[in-house]
Length: 187
Image (cartoon, one colour):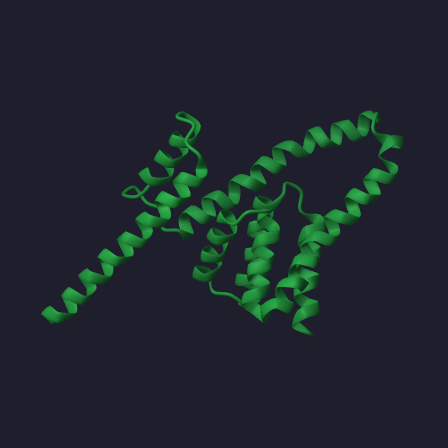
């Protein structure tokens, strides 16, 4: 099968049947792209996810663009972005056309109330998976905890946290590289 059609189909299916937005889509995208098809390595997926979260815009669209680009360049990113965006566009268009006829229906209201807990679970599941993949353990758990507390309790801007994390990661990488070079010289 043509990889463009296959990628479009995967992202269209995920975009059409995932309730809860980008974070709810992450485990489905990971399952399709990393686990089933092995188009991208787990480590690369985590990196793309981190970049997608840092980039402005919608997470689901960002991750689809980065995956598409990794697979097939600009064309791949356009195809995967369209696959992600089109289902929502079509659904919202249909709802806008017909919403006035069912907006006060008690069954529809109950359906939306029932969906809420499932959405929370769909958002929580990838958080734990990403934590495991990012090798968060008892020694470095303080980093996301302190970041969350700085944002939540002290009102720090997430932008400053992202910048600090980027600088810290860069410096940590430089330090590790120096240690590795020093260890090789000693051998």
